[in-house]
Image (cartoon, rainbow, N blue to C red; front, side, top):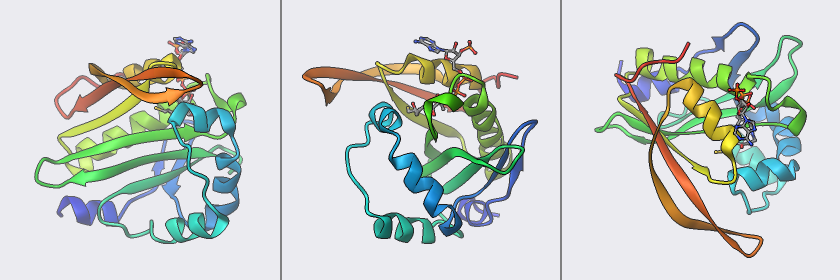
Amino acid sequence: MTIPDHLAAQPTLRTARLMLSQLGPDHLDAVMAGLADEDAMRLTGTRTSFTREQVGAHLAGLPGAEDRADFAITGPDGAYLGEVVLNELEEDDRSMNYRIALVGPSLRGHGIGTEAGRAVVAWAFDVVGLHRISLEVYAFNPAAQRSYEKIGFVVEGRAREVLRYEDEWIDAVTMSMLETDPRQP
Ligand SMILES: CC(C)(COP(=O)(O)OP(=O)(O)OC[C@H]1O[C@@H](n2cnc3c(N)ncnc32)[C@H](O)[C@@H]1OP(=O)(O)O)[C@@H](O)C(=O)NCCC(=O)NCCS
């Protein structure tokens, strides 16, 4: 199977506490609620406002997509906890970009994002066949950087003053993980 074949046939992943399933139109209400989480929007540098119609159209295009994998994270009771995404496929280089956001501050700091991330990178390297996964994290978000390091991402540099936030320039830390990098348990 090619990388696009694997991405199109995105499976459900299970971890000790979580289920990661295809994000799609059924998650519209939950995703809209997540977009109202101002702290998550700040931490992810999201400044655009999306209408319900725009989000619905985006979600409708995700199942079966050959160039990305969007997972809804749900807990043991089936509650939607957030999303974790591989996008920006460069097929020849076997590389993709990674992003994640849990919904609401109360979910953070309990290892949920790290647990979800470990499952996604394991699938991406071991099944999809990616070579490299990269991401950027703003310097004002050390908790996310720590979570990424616990997964196995390595700091590779710093993009200076990429974000203007509350009259200050914010750097972004660039991180990546290669298929040959040690996985953190
Ligand atoms: C980023 C995110 C996915 C991480 O998932 P999580 O489940 O909260 O992460 P974890 O609980 O596994 O790990 C957080 C770590 O940060 C540490 N931490 C918390 N605040 C910190 C701070 N100010 N400085 C350094 N480390 C900090 C915690 O102690 C923990 O590390 P530990 O397990 O070694 O104690 C989640 O917090 C989230 O969705 N945040 C909002 C959106 C966001 O920031 N997305 C990423 C954009 S790049």
